Length: 146
Length: 218
Image: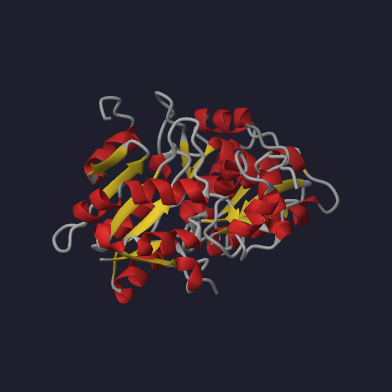
């Protein structure tokens, strides 16, 4: 699957992931190299037209505040992989690459080649699939969610 | 004329972000007070269990206008509430009716639109060029609403674009959040940040960090 790295992630992460492509089957491209500054509403079309099945992004603040972006991507059939820092962890380029490579087999296996797109939350400790409904409930403040 | 179609992706702002975007002079206390009084409408999400209150882009613009009327022009919001509410509602309508303030014969300020709706703001006296200032502020806020881009005072390289990263402040022309740059600065020097964001001018990185209140070593 072709995946697109959002602009905040270091462009070298794409190279690192591609060097390990035999482990996860993904081919990564950084959006920095051809579409920096793209507006949120244009990302789904950018992914579809470029044949990218997923956007890999990072979020260091309130997860729910990015809900509109995730909704739009999933609604357009594009999966979303969100890298989140662990407690006291900083997503330096080395950490971005390390966490993604560490879990690349799981990410590659969980991203669907066909069927409904998925929202994956990736941290040092693992990969968790989140549904939009869960995210919406979390957004509304349901404390029972993980 | 800007595109008036509804924005396909919403922007969301924490109160803290609203305060930093509308700096200087904006405080979370003011925003929460105006939310509490209903002047801004209901927030997209109420604060609860560690999840912050979230406001819409429309509400960000409304806060900008209320701030101007109250803090810079000395309006008494309590006294002129009905008129201000009318202005705030119209301000974020696709067909906003060209709302403008004017000076009545009695020296008070009034507000009207081009459809003929007119409302006197009783008891709110204006002097000199205050009406012009009111209209400049109102039309500037309307222009921000139409473009979705809010400029931030003293930070020319930092913007809040409702169409980029859901409105989170970013380095202008990029999808790089100032919050993310500040996050990285917890473990990286400015030199390392420049290498990581090699497409971003150093001045813009410095501004992003300053905007986030981060002092970074060279």
